[in-house]
Length: 93
Image (tube, rainbow, N blue to C red; front, side, top):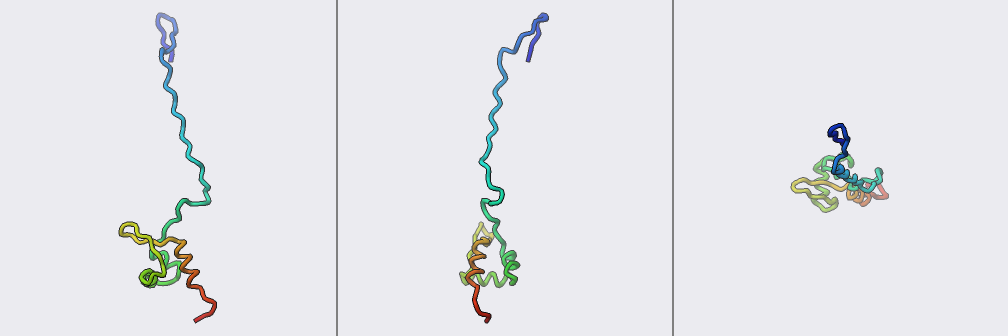
């Protein structure tokens, strides 16, 4: 900023403070989520085409693992996939 005294232009005695550099976070692959969204029991039941009480039974028997977040119960989609794979059979009963 210039200051004029008696018609003479004087430059500012102090320079403007430097602008801080912008911090750029490392780029993440947009196709790979950091953490997969966890499912509610109702979501798992809908995926399996069973009622929520059936999912409760699978959890109680230890066949399906859960994630406890405080009082909330969630199911990791990877655990649901493992459960489905474990339930596969070669013959119809």
